[in-house]
Image 1 (spheres, one colour):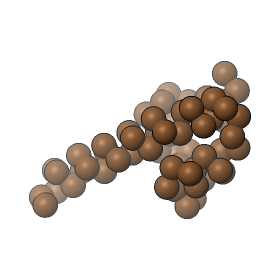
Image 2 (cartoon, one colour; image 1 turned 60 degrees about the horizontal axis):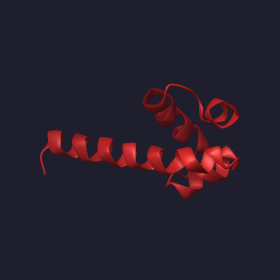
Image 3 (tube, rainbow, N blue to C red; image 1 turned 30 degrees about the horizontal axis):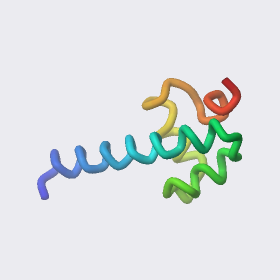
Length: 64
């Protein structure tokens, strides 16, 4: 696998994780639980990945 396809795979995986996270946040699940549910072991890493894709922090998304 070359570098470009590896980057596309990671980007696709991150997008899918965020799409799975949005309804969980909408249901009021705590951010830490959402992060773990979508495959992040560190909630800070989850929040850092969420913000550029979704335009706000996971907490802001949940409370909107």
